[in-house]
Image (cartoon, rainbow, N blue to C red):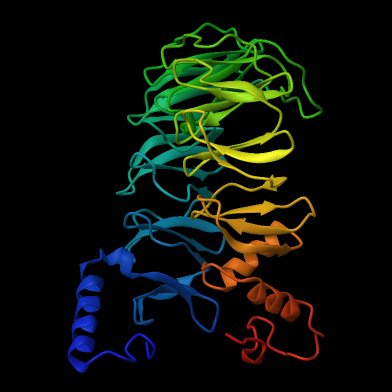
Length: 401
């Protein structure tokens, strides 16, 4: 705090302290608590001053999430509220690490069920396995004659999809998931209704895809049994194909609402209507980040926007994504540095790797650097190891600003 108040008047100091105290007081009780161990290795919860307000008594204690925390005594798990009171007996073999849709799965005597936040057993302990709720639904598993079968329940515990299927996607995304029968997948909604038939060899359901599903009807399996090749396409949320099944690779939708896809050795981008708005003509690309995508054109890196306009043309041979307005780039001599979105060099190209260029940038507080700064950093990095004992701080005598 000394540096914060170093050049601050007494009145401003008092004002800042008051603002800080008011802010702390405005936090929910659980947000003011953090797990802390005593000298005997038992965990309790301390306030912002480090004082125990929930007595150390647990062998494990998680952070609070929405007024509930996970705790363990010996081998038994349970939940407590912000007053330190268990919402149910601490007796479970395993528990979900947070509540979703107001419920969490618990395991006792090798069976799974669900508790609500008051500790009520709203779904009986009767399943072989259970998964977190999403979009008001949860995947559950039953066992029959040594075989496992999958289905879904809603928050009332009703089985909206009977557990008769050989597999399922265990989470919903934008109210869509999938079930598997006889080796083929079908897409379902949160009512348990099928919106496609059992026709796909593999499906990708992801919250990043905003209700769209990536599917294939053919392909080959790797040693783990996963479909790793084939011709992929994109379904909309109604279960209709918006593209042909022709892509060898399809990524998730990015922040520009475009999806990176490849046909053969060439890459481009498809929009949510299934149109190839950026032609599949690039052999090497990096997906959009902070509004720009990197493409390799004649051995040189250029950046394009979502309209397929070249906004930055360079002679660099390698790059990373833009992050915080900076991308790390490699020149034809194999040296790395950094540029901003205007193409200005903010880290001279003198580092041996992008990791080293990133380390340099972070050590200097993310500000434009000169070659002299970088050389001083490299001198420090390559110093004899016994000259400086403190390795996490660059010695002051190394700098000459």
